[in-house]
Length: 388
Image (spheres, rainbow, N blue to C red):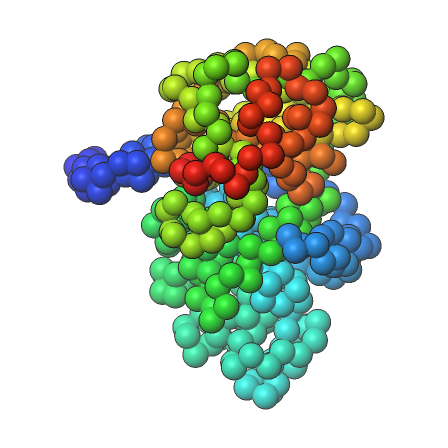
């Protein structure tokens, strides 16, 4: 206990806002891990086609998806990883090998004697994550084993390397990093910006491979009725648009990153309203989002998911599986997760939760959202970059 208190004191001394968020992550396991139930792998399809962030189409075969299932299974049973950690691992494996077990006969001729999906030639790298024997990741036999590579990537107390090299769980505050940055922290690549491009593909893989939850909530979401209206998610006069959808300078790193949402600064505790009738498919803490609510809607016959982020636990007023109405008070504005101040981070995903996001403000305007001020639409170039 004394040791834990000492760690908490040290984190607090680092200063807000990052220190305060880190304390929440240390004291609340839910802030850093989703239940493994959301990662139960079902039937593996023969193929899956998805698009990268830059719009390129990629098709994965059954063997590649089987490797993805291995990563998901290992992540689901590793304490502290959760869904966010699995997304990062899939992004890394997609980038490094396109989810293929690659031998490397020029460096290790014996690697061809193990089951493999082809040949790579990047230094002495092997396998799904292109791990290097010379860097201490494991023996050639270890690195030609997909399950071993997944365990090594996640690391932590149950990892095979004892923190050297570092797996994801060995990186302090990995939950507060952009997923691409977290992947880079493990891979230490000469090309650190590659990983972000594969996040939509990783999300699509999880959606395709996970089983429907046994409590029927996912089935309930599949039957969402057409919404009766569209509303703005904050009461009129309570908010200021502070950051827009698209490329921006990340306020934490100072590096240009893609911002998938629209940020609306508002006083702490301001009511957050559901933008449309729908079903709650997630309500809880999720990595950099902090407190997150995801609602699935049907709008004009199309599935649409709305994300509401950065709430504290006590600011979430709905449960997964709840049916909500347009304009219903579902949460309160907070500043949890990767946040520099009280605000709502809003994302709109036409096609569902695993489809790419679009500009939320423009989407709301196009659908005639009640309560949306005209001045807030199509002013991205004029909005200062303040909050993530």
